[in-house]
Length: 150
Image 1 (tube, helix red, strand yellow):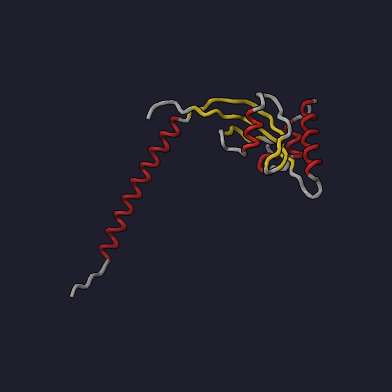
Image 2: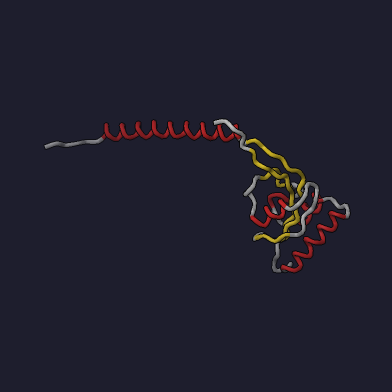
């Protein structure tokens, strides 16, 4: 089962601006651009995320999404994340959710080989238990079956 299974992870945070009936598409994009400029001028990303981000799950955490794996985010987000240097802020990017600005905080290669081995072993154990339970259930059904031979 050996061999390293390295996955490139990105520690990222974002601010999401969703277009609404009150804030149209153009205004949402403009606000995202303005927030990017404010961050680059020295304002705190986390404070602006708490104040402006429409991502309920991460806004209270200052936009923190934590360590993400490839394929975990929507394609537009992934592309913006890949094209942004560590410590940099992305240009506003549109996804199905709205306008994002991202800050890539760090990148790392994580070895998932031990997790993969654990998952394989756990899967094998689950399969064994399932087979044992199935056989026990079938035995019980057969024992309870009434056959009347005439």
